[in-house]
Length: 172
Image (tube, rainbow, N blue to C red; front, side):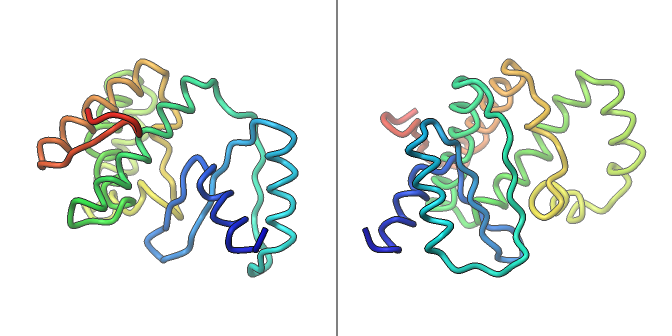
C-alpha cells in the first residue's frame, strides 16, 4: 500500500482529525485491534514529521462515549462544509456557549475556577482557549448524560443555522 493510501486509511479510522488555529494537524485515533496498532506503527514508520513530537496513549472510553465524541466531530466537519467557519471554530463556539454552561451548572468547583480565571477574559480569548493548543477542558469532563445534553444543543444550533446534519448514515 502506498504511503498516501495508508495515511488516508488511518485518517479515515481516526476518531477525529482537527487543525488547530495555527494550522497544525493532529490525528486522534482509537485502536480497537492488534491490527490497528500494527497499522499505526507502519504509518509512523513511513510518514515524515518534525521531531520532537508528542505521543499520548490512554485507555479509550466506552463505545457509547466514543460514539458521542465521534458524532460531535463529524457534525463540526459537516458544518464546515455547509457554513462559513472551520470545524475547529464551530467546536470552539459550541464548547464555550453550550458546554461551559452545562459544567458551570453542574459543578460548583468548575464554575468557581471558570468564573475566576476565564470569564473575565475577552470573548475572542475564551474562544481560543476552547481549542488547540490550549484545549480548555469542557467536553472531556462530561458524563454521558451531559454529553447528550451538549449534543442536543449543538444539533439545535447547527440545524438552526440551516445546516443538515447526519449521524453518518441518516439525516437528523
